[in-house]
Amino acid sequence: MKTLKFLAVIIAVLLGFRGFTQDGLEGIVVEKFYVSTKADNAGKLYSGDLPEGSVTYRIYVDLKPGFRFQAAYGSPQHPLVIESTENFYNHLEDGNTHPNIIPERTYKKNITLLDSWLSAGACAEGHLGILKEYDDTISDKFIGFEKGYFKGKKKSVPLYDVDGMKRSAVLPVPTFFQMDFLSKVIGTTTSEKRIHSDNGAWAALGKGAVGADSLSTNCVLIAQLTTEGELSFELNLLIGAPNGSSQKYVARNPITEESEWTHPELIFNSNSKKNKSKKK
Image (cartoon, rainbow, N blue to C red):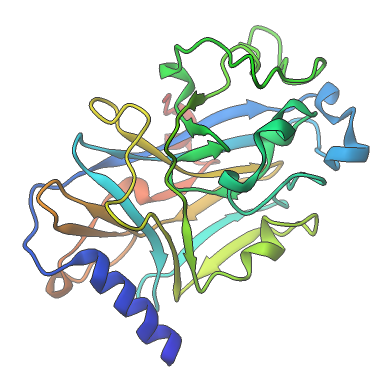
């Protein structure tokens, strides 16, 4: 009972007590970041076993300029669910629950870049995540990915050429509430298939987080998940508005009296025809 009250307090603090402004959530972008090949599994003694054909998905919250990602949460009325039909991949040596604490130097080794984690915008120590289609930065010479990895399938752009990373001196750090179970799901080599919470959240405290290009696309990376299986999720979000107020979006059954909104892209399944045809 105390934990439920604790989550309610956190949401109340983030929401504040001021009125809403125009809706700030444009949608959810699920990027098929990379599809693994046999060559990517060559260093499995150090990286762990990654089945050929595994897909690394990145989940971005697409916001209007001026809006900020504050939290992704689950409550008794609105559970948060992220799951796959197969286990999530976790890097054997260097994986962790969020990328801010994965040392930058480890991204040079084998396939650390494909680890599964949750985020508030970062994709590595010193780097924000950015959609590959908007990544026009020159490959970071400080990273220098190990040769033999990330070439991808034929006719695809190698991940070492367009890596979806943008160097930044300031990174939002996710704060986790009532989500200690994450260490067993995406923080260790003990692979699991499901992230579920009806009383927890991960948040960007303070003002919240904006995307790598906050004045145009403003897409905030909130998760990276690598799996051989079918990925699905139901997300609930708190979004900060330019006037200091917050907006609450839920995947299903919004409660008008609690000023809840919804958006169809908060529910996702990688196997649906709609999502297969969606090119982002």
